[in-house]
Length: 283
Ligand code: GUN
Image 1 (cartoon, protein in one colour):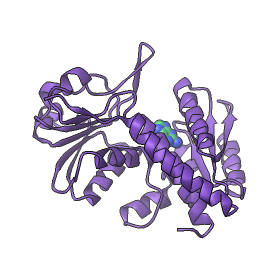
Image 2 (cartoon, helix red, strand yellow; image 1 turned 180 degrees about the vertical axis):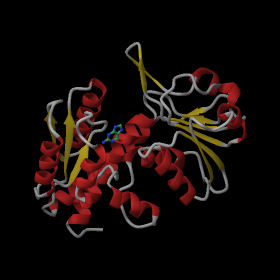
Image 3 (cartoon, helix red, strand yellow; image 1 turned 90 degrees about the horizontal axis):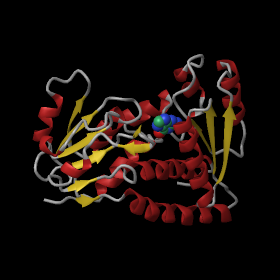
Image 4 (tube, protein in one colour; image 1 turned 60 degrees about the vertical axis):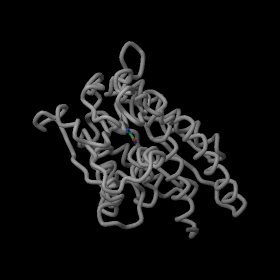
């Protein structure tokens, strides 16, 4: 079998066109969505993600700003900046790029973001709302994965292996998949014979960051493969899955780059639009 490509760039383009229309409508009602991205330090990959989010927001008619703080910024200074943005009425959504430098406690910073502006859905209040089924901001990569999976049919009753248990991807996507009535197994570095077990699953979502972790021989015939890995090797972005061998076995597969990445950014925009709408009393 040669798998159908889940083209993240195409799917994201269509989705963003819909968002742009909604942004324009909201602007005619006097509300301009604004995404403000905070980055501390000069990590090259993080800076590039932040610039992409900023550009993507402006492209669909939102306002966007980057607050770039130096590597040596103290925790108090970061918290002060968050407080300022929380109280700035022109800012709809705040996103703090992680990881943060070691002198800054990530949990303290994420907890400081006002829940109604937390477009990443990383604050404890919003995580709690997700797990109790309330309206909230769902983390962007998991939301993007679910959007890609919509293009493969229903997840009801499907067996899904989620590889990686991070707070950003593995754990929230396991919850979203469960909401769609999939049967989810959350695998991680201590799972016994992890790769050998994958052959039993109809869907594999890999979010580890280990190039070549999974290849075609490890997959069930007709599996749906979502590769969330994004590791830079020799200046190139590579996923966890060996694409060439996997595409011969899978029914659907995401490329890296051009798979999950564009959907993550799209969902930042989606959540910023929701923040602007909800805060101004629109549904
Ligand atoms: N670092 C890696 N992924 C993400 C993300 O989705 N949001 C933020 N804020 N930081 C990240």
